[in-house]
Length: 246
Image (cartoon, rainbow, N blue to C red; front, side, top):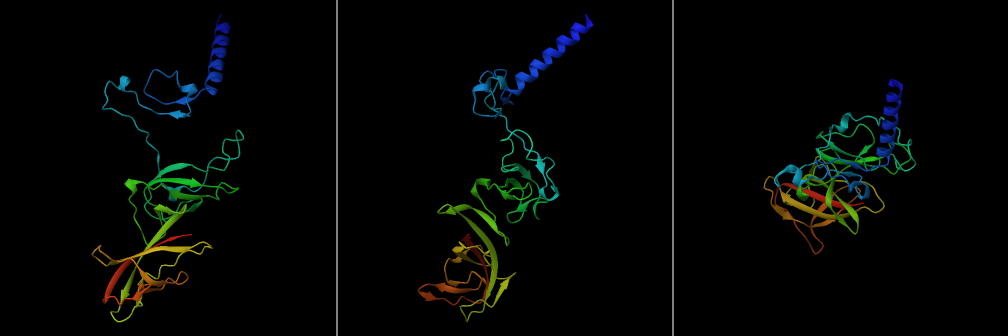
């Protein structure tokens, strides 16, 4: 009898495993999962008002918090498993990063790490050949830094990037006398071009101008003014942001 019981349990467990292997994954606070096999969603984390007994109680998905500066290696070979399991080596992997500076410990990093959601863009032939990129959110707000910052905008399907700097005007020339920490140089690219330059009066947050007479992509040097007239700025410090596509 004992042998029969053991064999029966083994058959039941095996059948359950086979059944689950072909089922959709459904993570939900609901006892009605009959629609899951026919759903396009692989993971369904939807909330059920009936089970919650209230329309004021919702459910969200909490992502693991990851410090990308300490993420130094992928611990699994992306070439194993079924053929379409990891077709491009962790391409599209999403994490919630907690690091507020530096770069990721594995793969490249677009700009400097900030707290928030990042994804791994990898079209290379190796696990480490991709680049971590921020998923920009926060209501569309962006924080432009002295390092390359990806903005929330694109022009003709080309991503707009931005960098922040500061220059000093002498009050007697259209050419700045100094740049802090240095002229903003656009990263080399065959398609690189300036999209916009916005100049602020340092310390005020007020836009002073949004034109320059000329801007040298290779050196970052600018001449104040517009295509129709040169303008000598009053002596003082000015913050400026260069936006560009590449």
